Length: 359
Length: 191
Image 1 (cartoon, rainbow over the protein chains, first blue to last red):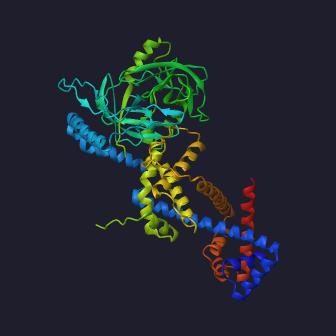
Image 2: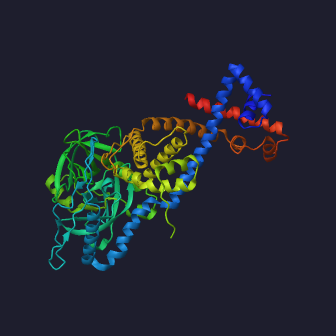
Image 3: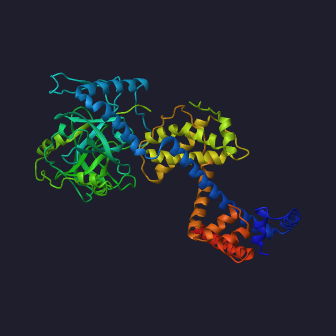
């Protein structure tokens, strides 16, 4: 009889009392056999533990599915549907009032959602607004010349148009897990938007405004660059770190952020609120989306690379959405003076207002 | 409407020790949001939160089943501490050092779970290697090995199921399969 067979008979309880005892005596006397047995025993235990672990994992998955469902992205969209369903048909004025009330309730009930201070050396650039801070007031001329008062957003950042079909790009960290999103700028009143696609590696979210007819954009003046940009290239960004659009310029200082090649390191002093803003080269090509800044080094920021965003847009599984998201290929900014470029780009860059309850 | 049964921390531990599915399910539901909130606040997705949480429950489960285990802090603190460590490791692995909110925890306390995590990782490595080896082993060996060591079928049953002429023959097959599995497992380890 092979040792292994004897071991297995012993381990699986196939031996009678007498044989069991005899085997145990042998083990005590024969150190080599004991060592061989111990190795085998450990191996069998690992084999059994692996099976138990797989079963346990499956059990947890099924508990999770029963309790919380499966598709997590849907969860966010369901909240959007709630807004669309109950608020959109009541018209713009009423919807603002309802949103104001809902947001006030959630803000009050959670004691105000305040993003906490961070210790890491990387800060995302969503602008933090407390409920107590001044309300954001924007004029809507069409509404009986009355200026509506908006409840302050919990987070504010920047976003810009991908095309003129109502699609925008911003930073995922800004809009993740939010209750509602609005975009607006000097030329456009606040428009409700929803997330249609996200990518956490690139920190990118694609938004679509609910009502495309509410916003008429001309053809985009910029295009997405399809190749990587070089170190030292001159770049600039536009964003809403405050109520007014702010221009910043610098160079590409590194092709990666701490080994993450999805991002450029840039030498532009970016501020909270710059998140989601376009990063352009001197010819007016979009080369990235501003994502965060380095807290340890003033004046440096990070931006997701446009070359990967291009890939992302091209490879969206939803074919219909993919078709909708074909980025603009024509660049109308080449050779222009910077001030002229900015003037052309500004209407396509938007403030992103994000509302979320604390929980 | 059924009244939701509330369990105390020690009832949770006892339930895990005894493989009580009702208790496991109640525990799972009770603390998911703690971890979900933390991961979401720290650049994670719901899906990642789910993975981290399930791993956390596995750490807790494996620990709770040790006879000597005692929970020396609130269950929520333990779960939060483990989840946080696991998530930080995950972030480091992908060198995505996003903002880390230190103050997102409700009770503000953390316990040292370094040993638990270390032990868990060691175990996971072994199990992962075993799983890979089993996949590499292929059929019918994989099923034969599992029938014998996990389902604990007798050699007669195996012989019948796999169409071997007799139990001895089945035993030889099991031996050969086991030797191959061991080779895969130990060679993988050297890589």
